[in-house]
Structure formats: C-alpha cells, structure tokens
Length: 130
Image (cartoon, rainbow, N blue to C red; front, side, top):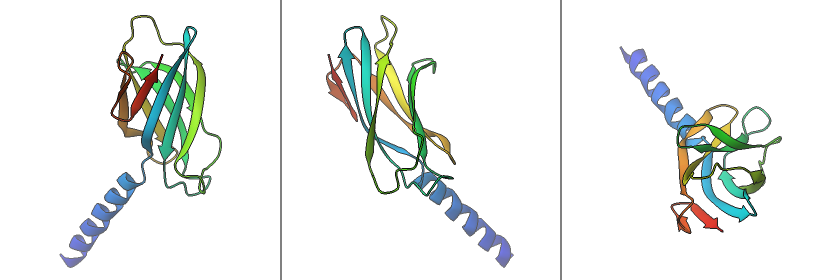
C-alpha cells in the first residue's frame, strides 16, 4: 500500500514537471506587408539540449489548417525568451482569426495557443500592425 502511494506521488510530480516544461508563447506580432504577412513570435522554454528544445511554431486558421510554420533548428538554452520571424505568410482573404501554436521535441504542440484577431490592433499576447 505504501509503495502504491509513493508511485502515485511520483507520477503526479512527473506530470506537473512535464506541463511546466511545455513551450510558452510570450507574444506575437503580425505585420501586413503588401498582400502578405510577416510574424515575429517570442517563445520561452527550458531548452535542455538537442533532445528537448522548442523546435517550431506555426500559424493555423480556425479549422486548424496550417498557414505557415517557422522551424527552429537548434536549442536556445542561453537565449530565453527568444524571438524568431516568419515572412511571406499568406492568410486567405476574409480570414479574421488565426492562432499561433508552439512545439517542443518532447511534448509536441503546446496546449497554449494565442488567438489573433487580425481586425484588432492588439489583444492578449498579440499585436497587429497594418
């Protein structure tokens, strides 16, 4: 009985640690550039070498269709938070809401998303410059 309680405690601790290490989207800025968009996204993650680091972020529409992706090719252990850009992003005409999602090599796509209303100048963790 005592070992079952210890195993449960260890499992709970591992779950909370895993969630704490998911990549966080700190902020994102969308810039309208003559028909297409450029996006600057700032991420925070406890990168721990090549086996566990934030390795991508993407923009998806309301149905989850990927519109653009920025692949991150190396860990940023000493640069936190860090910002990377994506240019020439095509967002279909009439689309007013998109989402930014982030990925790390261990946890996959984070549960945290940033909802971006392209008709607003700013909102929760986003800015739009047209």
